[in-house]
Image (cartoon, rainbow, N blue to C red; front, side, top):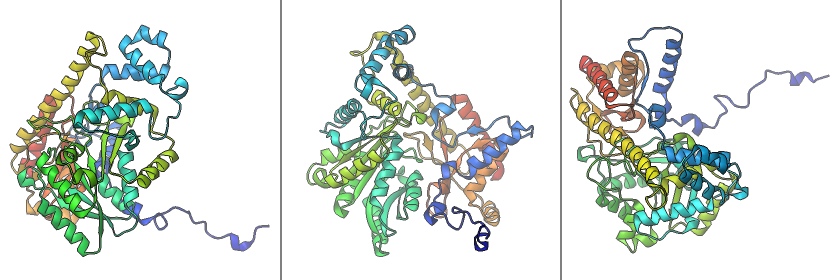
Length: 486
């Protein structure tokens, strides 16, 4: 017989009042209200409900292959060959060069199986490929013990943020506008966001004075600033930082003795007459004392760049001037998760060590070059279209899209529209994006989800559509809607 005192109303362990507060406060705008509304509308369309458009146009998220970008044939043949591990059969289907590369990887994986665990930091031969890639890119020496293969860039970023934030008073300096993983993780781990503003009037440039202002305001309120985030090329802004900008970052980090988190996942996506310069290279060229002391964790990803392999979840993190105990702690936590997925790791190897004229046949090399160039040229053309067309819309101004996959235009919304949004309990730029979605089916993301100067309104839009014609048509619809609103 059960005791009567046990027959009480059952209360769930996890509910609104018992889930950890930081997780409830955490937000991620890229997959927020706009994505929820679009999902509802898509279901309604499937049920026969009519809208003034035939489809939802996704210009909200950097997910290239979902929006029509084709994968690189050579890479997919290597991955397929790794998964089947049947060289004789594979040579009947795929190029001999792809099968040879797959055999090379499999011969360096435990038990020759693409489904087996690797060492926690990553497959040794691919770690070596990443090492060679960084050394060639930056003309530096890299220690293999400082390279970790990760599940996209996000795993490395998450791990570093977790190590940095110990309590509420620990602060992370985040560029505004920013990719919202940084604000989300700072909130999730119950730290303090320390925003510093990029200068929209100077092409989203940086200044030492703004870094100083941000740092001083934070320390005056008791925040212990521990790290500075740099996103280059910029997400959501599409700008490319110069080496002069990066010099300021490094000098500031050295002066304040804080760690630099360098998000460099779009390093191949530069459409103007600028060269990508990594923080690692900038440190090396500045020399002592900066290169000897400034702590750095830099991140790259297979998801972005030209390959767009978001679903493979491959990336890497490189550390510089990181304490040996901290490195050991990272190794420990990588061991807890066993290893990054093997196919993602192999994808990273293919990204950093692509086929060359010396390593593959002429036909395979030419096809690889043509496919990559076609992807790049399409991204560049659509970036140029965004810059031109957005600046041609009354009430919208946009800096040149120099790189990455995004524009972050400013909208001068009428005061009456802003007042209406506030009455509805939403930010004016969120209302603008929701209204565009309802009227046109076009998904863009409000600037309030990325951070912006108070009193200004923006939205983020990607250049990831199948054609220039579709990009032009989408921008025309945004222009028509905005003209009516104005």
